[in-house]
Image (tube, rainbow, N blue to C red):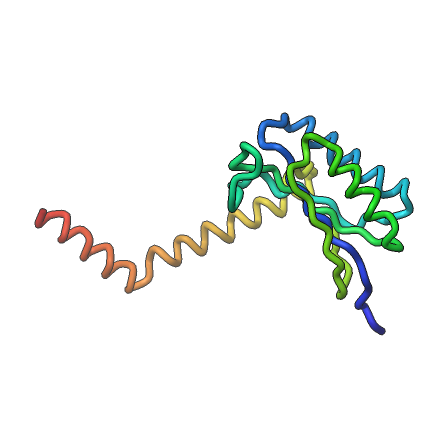
Length: 154
């Protein structure tokens, strides 16, 4: 079975001075517009505020949003026109992709159900154990003793 399909990835950059609530509104607006135009949203993620490679307008930072979608290709022109007319979008680009379809990533804001709390506690226990193992290896003990002797000599 061939899992490789054609889909589109649109990355757009919003102005850095937009409130978080407005960013969510923009993401929702473009997602709804895309669905209205006949596209199917595969994944939509806010990538966060990052420094731009070069200044765009008067902005040195921007809020990056990645949108993976499928459709007949006719919807791209219309969604890009909407982005071009928006004062809040400072850059956008759509790339045609071919390969396995992206799976939606879980958001950073997870709901703490008893099941997720158990998993989080398991992760913490594993991390503690790994850290304790790292602390007690002969190599780390040697490094720690060398650092202590260097501190004393200073």
